[in-house]
Length: 99
View 1 (cartoon, rainbow, N blue to C red):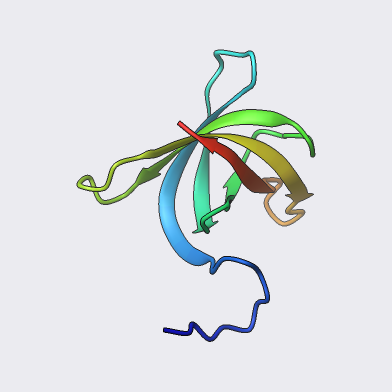
View 2 (view 1 turned 30 degrees about the vertical axis):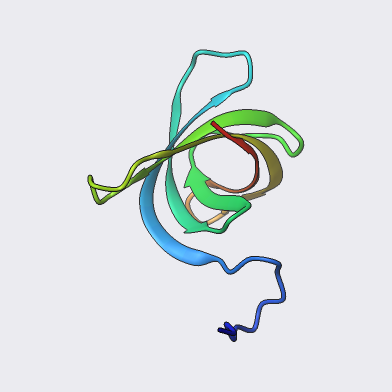
């Protein structure tokens, strides 16, 4: 079966409505975000907490549907863009290792 979509990425991105919980590598402090899309190798979310490109974090994606198991992974921050309209950060992650 062939999937036809305009984006030329290796994996299809699907829109998601989920909660994100993350911590910076080596820290026990937890932060929250709102998931926007998910693919086999990455996650895009919005958060109040500023991250830095190249930073490694631990992330858990909590689906809204309780019967779906959360996804926990070690990830690398690939992109951070500040949304000037609301002061939040749009973060793109590469999933490095699912745990």
